[in-house]
Length: 96
Image: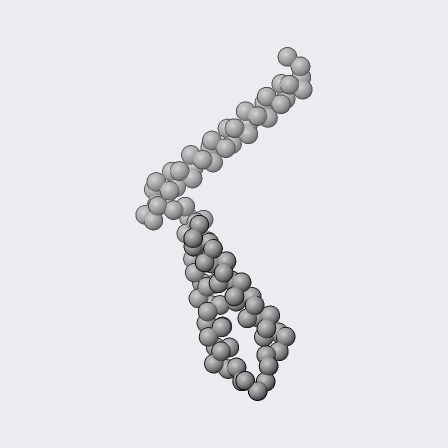
């Protein structure tokens, strides 16, 4: 066997073994968890929910403070745009 072929085969075996170990590890984590999700998934869900709640709160407060006579400043517009983006992304994540 060519030395280069041997190295390629060894790399493929290591890569396959690594994938298998990670798959089994996450499967066991899901199996043992109460929620049926990995700890990483639970953490991401919590972050998503917190971001959604905070962005809704910011938008609600900005609507209360908006004065029709005075248009929002550029920084306020950017903040509101970021809030909408956070809400859209959290909705998208919730649907996946």
